[in-house]
Amino acid sequence: MPARKLAPSILSADFSQLAEDVERVTDEADLLHVDVMDGHFVPNLTIGPPVVRSLRKRTDLFLDCHLMVDNPGDLLADFADAGADGCTVHIELGDPRPVFETMRGLGLRVGLTHNPETPVQAVLPYLEEIDLLLFMSVHPGFGGQAFIPSVLDKLTEARRIVDERSLAVELEIDGGINIDTAPRAADAGADILVAGSAVFHADDPAVAARKIKEAAWPNAS
Ligand code: DX5
Ligand code: ZN
Image 1 (cartoon, rainbow, N blue to C red):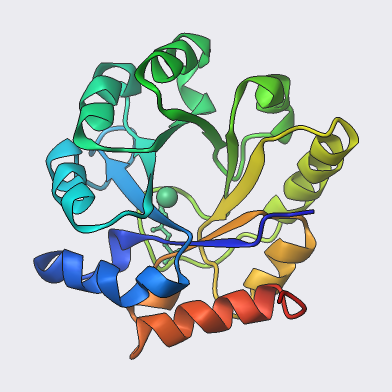
Image 2 (cartoon, rainbow, N blue to C red):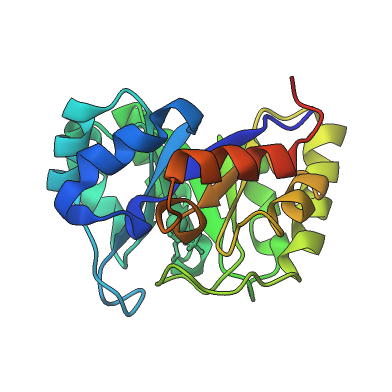
């Protein structure tokens, strides 16, 4: 059965009061999603290990670092040292196995992701080697984009395989998740919903986060 977790994405928080924004959603959050962008792999530039280090001092939430960078292997030790719990790398960069090995050596949970236009077949061979498979439901780089529904077929396919083989890997979806799209992602079998603008741009981020979870999993106790 899917795990039913919500991961607010701090990309849409107010960076001038990041700790306060995180605190506001802590009771509703199961993980905290941290978008790392290098201005090369994606056209936007965000944050790196120093911010993770600062966050680590202010929250016990799992820090789920989504690395949208050309050279994740060079940065993993810094993220682990800063207090990241898991790092997720993109399959579009090529063979991820050396990076998986580095992550395991550093004690990081191992995540793999793929862009909306990348076929799910590109990531399925790694299911047995990872803890998290992330489905991008927008083109990576920016918050606030519209959900790309074709990702749901890929998610459904992965859910079927994960259940069939009783694998421990969690399926996470990231991009355009809100009260309307969350139920569709949950029905397709997502364990973890990432939501940025739908949470942090709401008048009350905690209420927004709770409503997304209730919409996704109405029968959860
Ligand atoms: C996009 C990021 C997402 C982003 C999601 O590249 O990976 O995590 O924060 O933002 P929303 O929920 O606004 O689409
Ligand atoms: Zn992300």
